[in-house]
View (spheres, rainbow, N blue to C red):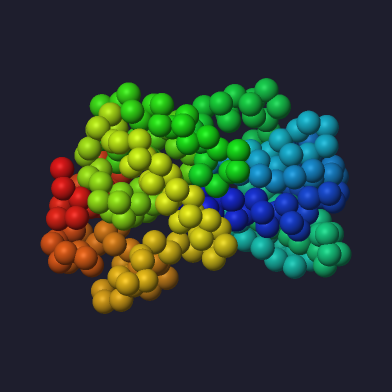
Length: 270
């Protein structure tokens, strides 16, 4: 599932290319036909992300909410756009701020729907602070973490605690700070949480700028390759049974709340 930096990168691109322009919206697949008709021909005011949620705001106080889920993706093309291929849930196009034209197709999302302002407010209210938003308040997350007996590995993945963190950032930021994912939130120190939050902000901003994750420090960025040719080099994520880059202990793995969890028992003792 795409993590928060992917959605913020999409939001910035859509905002940069189309915000302020009258856009055309359709649903070649048909599943979003009614919603597309509501916003087709309106001005897209802005695009923004909250955690793993993308919001397009249109004139008339109408929002399109997209959650990519496991399989959702946007693909782009120049104008005029070719005939749709596959199950295109939403097609969005416009002249672009630079006049060059911009078009994008959305396929396979978990959600693509219209929301009213109160519904957007309710969605945002359910989410924890997003490290990539300048208005984020890490103390909101800390207030929940310090009272919880759940492991910090679970809490970081709970979108109501912290919005936008996924499996890779969860595993890697805990490794970078030597914190076991099993440690209860209530046993985490305030200084440790501040350091974790600051690191999440920095790492996720790198993901937005580069379009890919970069989580391994320069002094460790060598040796074992990444877990797949097109994926980032990691400390522990998807490296079960391999030697830790720092202490050579085998990287461990288990399933936690339905998601794969990776950690190094040598560097992250219980």
